[in-house]
Length: 270
Image (cartoon, rainbow, N blue to C red; front, side, top):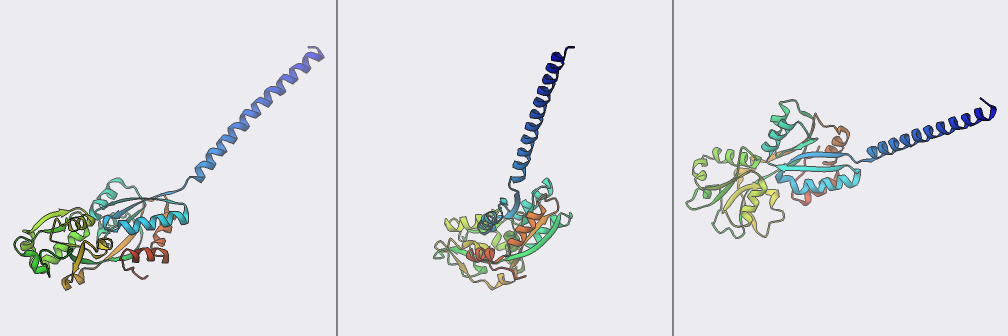
């Protein structure tokens, strides 16, 4: 091979190496961009929550997103239904039921990592505004013609509370004859009352905060001992443990307490 030929071969090899290097550099750059985008993608918390708590918890979730950048997605429903969903899917980050007892099915399976008491759930006897049926106490719920709405004890905490209270006062059978609807969630009871479809219902006191022009409460001393504590718990299979713990702690911050109070809830002091 002549000296000129050897020179041309060398130049050709250099060009090939340059092209290979350029392609490799481009691949690395694209990979780096993809990893950066993946790193920058916000975390998302998936939270199961009792329907009676939906209004304040949604607002607290929005405040948490603004503070941390972590997205929060909720599934609302009856506490028993949510517990069943958790046991079935083994997915999600936190569980906020209507009562400590509603954690039991999940906790017994060893699926609770950490929990905290948040607010009180206070049961109350409620009637439509002006009390058209003239309800003044528990005993009036068994009067002929009175239409009563109660929660389904298999689905929601307020249903369990109502049934237990009626049984302890030995009027369950009489009142059950007047029950025209059993609801899966606490918020449905408020809807039946506010639209005048029923004469009375046992609800959570906090749920009428925006319906005081349509619903009023009847003082019932028998319900005082049935106040419940609302917990929040991190699920063991949570893949965002740090963010989940941040949210658990955020539920008891001063910012969150203001939101709870705005919606009529009394917070539990740690």
